[in-house]
Length: 402
Image 1 (cartoon, rainbow, N blue to C red):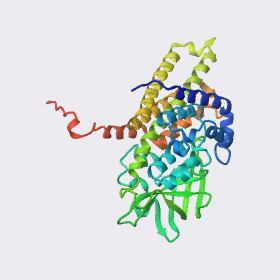
Image 2 (image 1 turned 45 degrees about the vertical axis):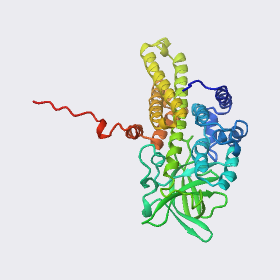
Image 3 (image 1 turned 120 degrees about the vertical axis):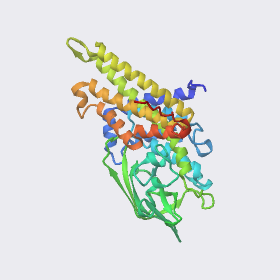
Image 4 (image 1 turned 90 degrees about the horizontal axis):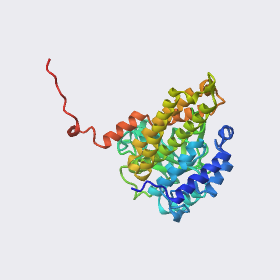
């Protein structure tokens, strides 16, 4: 393994950091999240057209850059530093890889070039309200319980003379209120032979589609409730190529890469919160001296620095080997939670105010763990996959005679 970044990766980092430093300050963030889309459309077009962010991990034949998870992780780390509100995660990390893996040639040709150019945003709508479960981050997806529990819940799909129709709803859909394309997981085939498939719902032409933006803890991560009432949809993939087990395998594969990307994003947010805190304690005075000169404060900051650097190493390794994504995400989310909590404390009274940016990072930490965690479930599932809990590997119990 070569841990050094390439010149292209360093250039992505430098260019994106310079641009976001100019265009994505705390006031710009607050203005962007209060727009109808929940992000700055002009900035998103610039990121897509000038830097090609949505197509970083897409093949060149579809207009992408032909890079891999490492480049996308670098971009998301910088987005995390600035708490950039954008459809990058939902479009580039969730929807586009599923279309590339499951879609037909015609679907890939029609959709992926538009995604790479920034003309089309997309997202993944999953019943059950837990993306972490559906993506295989905290449990096995083969049973299908993540998709709503069969006939009594989730989204139902039935074929008709004019195509598929969907009925049901999905909550906590990333950028679900603004995405131009929805990938919806739905049950098909009736209760005895039910299986879960993925369907394409185009927001501009679909009938019976209602989308409501939800009030979320983290304003920079827009969530929506998607309601489908006999909504017209197109099956993702062909009938004769869709596996009987459904999209669980493809979702799990996408989940591993998404976990690595999310880990890098969380590390970026944690590092930025730490940097802002260090700058503050240099100038905040108490008893006639900067509080950063107190030994107790130095120790706390040193502990945070070690924690963030360890999480960064895990995130970079996961970008190279997405199989380690779940464990890296657990470490990164924990580092983000602890760092942002300490940042609020070390900022003192001003850190608790609504106007200060410290609470933006703290809310990102709390919301991400609710949406993609919790940390102990991520670690538990990673341990199960590694075989740490198999009977043959358990330590024998020692009984002590009294």
